[in-house]
Image (tube, rainbow, N blue to C red; front, side, top):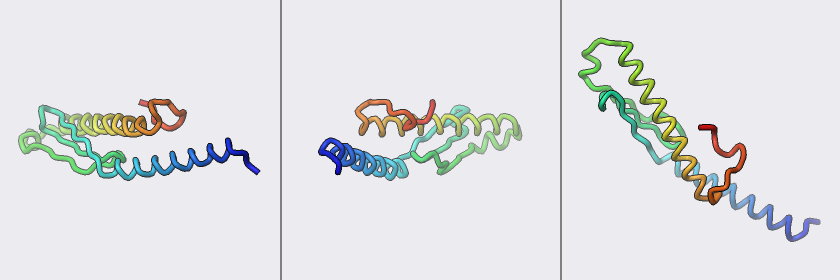
Length: 108
């Protein structure tokens, strides 16, 4: 038999797990947008770190400079990933009360 302390702890863990699931669902519909090259490349990602869209300005395509294009896309995708991690941490902090739980947040 569990005493009341253990029962309460299990209840809290179950509630927190439910809140985590809600946050995951919420992150799936939230987006971040990043641009590089003065707006020549725009990347939109959702809160689950999935790339939703990539827009490349016609001027950049017409430059025929593959290396610049690749660098700008790489930079935009990396910045979007960083912003998604920040968004996820912010959302998780709402339920953890700012408490750092090991393994919960990915390294930044």
